[in-house]
Amino acid sequence: MPAHRRTALIAGVLYLVTIVTSIPALALKSALLDGGTSGRALSDARLAVVLELVLAVACVGTAVVLHPVLRRFGESLSLGFVAARTVEAATIVVGVLAVLALVTLRQAGPDDAAPALVALHDWAFLVGPGLVPAVNALCLGTVLFRSRLVPRVIPAIGLAGAPLLIASAVATVAGSLDQVSTLAGALALPIAAWELSLGVWLTVKGFRPAALAGAGQSTGSAPRTA
Image 1 (cartoon, rainbow, N blue to C red):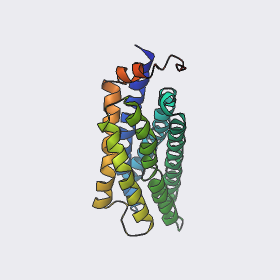
Image 2: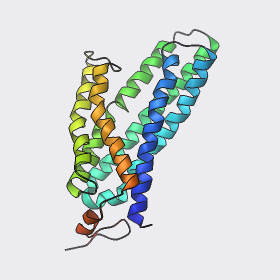
Image 3: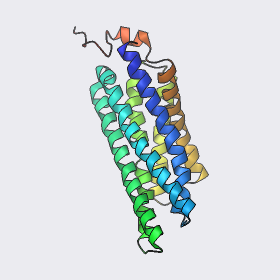
Image 4: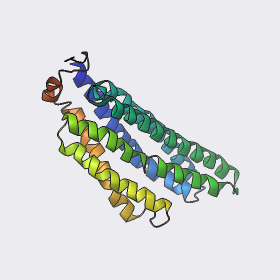
């Protein structure tokens, strides 16, 4: 398997991992965050923690794996993507720590610190998965749109969805939008569609050979000089 195809395959699988871990994790920890103290709520929250740790690793992995290819088409944007993905993973871990601390408190009984931990989780979720993916889309989407490594319609979805997600996050911070409302979900849908379509394309198809050939590049070769 060519190096560039292997890179695309790994990145695509990691993108799909972020999707299949984030959605159930959100559902599994909801009972705990809503005040649940049952054994089921606690065990579900622990499983959510495991999934979100995998999610954090996969987030960074997508950027690290893609960087050797992307830097040939836009080094600054590629580095920005790595940085943004790292920040996203870090905020996910902050939320994980809040959930783990909440599990400990709920096992011990009611505690005044519980609301603060729930608030910490919610804000970490807003800044991380709720906002940084817009930055990811602007960085990665711009490189992919310019380079044509994938069909332009895929990054176009991300570039169109980025300002919608930013607007949703700003409205949530301002107190005019509920973070888990139907409208907030609708505003986040284009970014979700962009990440899913990118993951599927990279896994099934990989990078477009014409784009790599046109740039005189591959993941295993040095840049061509003029």
